[in-house]
Image 1 (tube, helix red, strand yellow):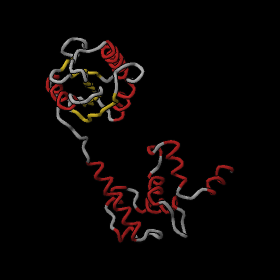
Image 2 (cartoon, rainbow, N blue to C red):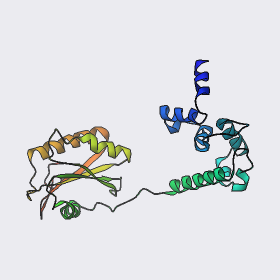
Image 3 (cartoon, rainbow, N blue to C red):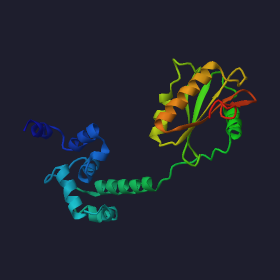
Image 4 (tube, rainbow, N blue to C red):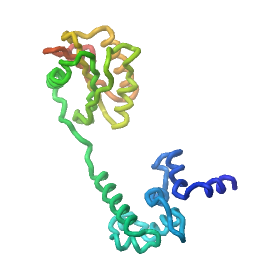
Length: 229
């Protein structure tokens, strides 16, 4: 009883929103999701009832997608503005569904990435750690600067890399960073950090394919030099 009274005190559009905040969007029904989009109901129906009325008329979401503005406006509480918003939402969802994961080229070799990193990082006066996130075909799906500063244990941490890798479902990672001194020879901190990342990746099923260090004109690949197996 107390819970139902509390819900009645909340704006009607907040009921499913509260659930989304607590449990995530995947736990909501079609009716609850539609209610969030509608925001409020009409004089005759609250927003959940209005969403239910629409879905009873169009139980197959495919048919709802093909409704016209005029057909939507037959529902009390759905005027021109709201029908336009609904159609825009449907089209945007359709475009998201069709969207492909962006690809930024395929990693062919440490040499090609080394040359790319030299071009991008050689002039920086601080160390920049860059991660290339790859799919199962070794296509780059994201390149991101993870952090800036020396690779010591107080600053660099593998969680920043793997948080991003998990978010975009990457299969492999290549790391790259610069040495402002111009000498790409790895330091003990570089080697320790690489080992930590590799071990974390093994536990998570995400391979560290290489760690490339660049100077002004040269690069050092830990894969090529057998520091990574």
